[in-house]
Image: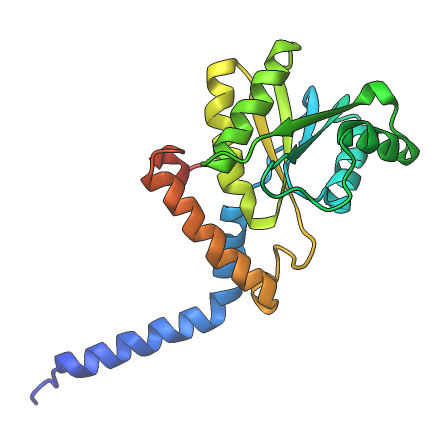
Length: 220
């Protein structure tokens, strides 16, 4: 009795079908892992919590930072904001640092627990920010920092800060916070899909330009 041989085309269709079944059964696991990659989260305590920059200070980031201080993970909250001479926000007072401090005190923070650092918008913005902030903190003896960044921007921001921190002896612990999507189901929100695609491209751009090392593609 002759044995039947499977043709190459048949084998290809069988393999494709099995691959599709595996992907359908495990797509959530794959997408969650992809989200975890762009939004890594470290553990441990630090000297300060850094709420990463924005033209507009995110309430969620400040509240998360306050909670980290309340839990004893850090002693001081550092608020970073961009000061663009070309793109000033209408009606923002000149002494913005003082205004921020005054608005943060009612949240239960003491004045000495709050530091506001102004950063320029020079390209590459995230790396320039890291250099400005960590140079400032290094002068005051800071040796470790929890970095709060929004969503999928976390990995690029973390590695920019980490690279600068290595030369200054400052350890960086990444800590993402989420507003319009969540890490465990980001693909169900348009904002989540958009941010994942955009931040993936920006991260790859930073790697290709040498702003962050190639090993950032493989390790936290």
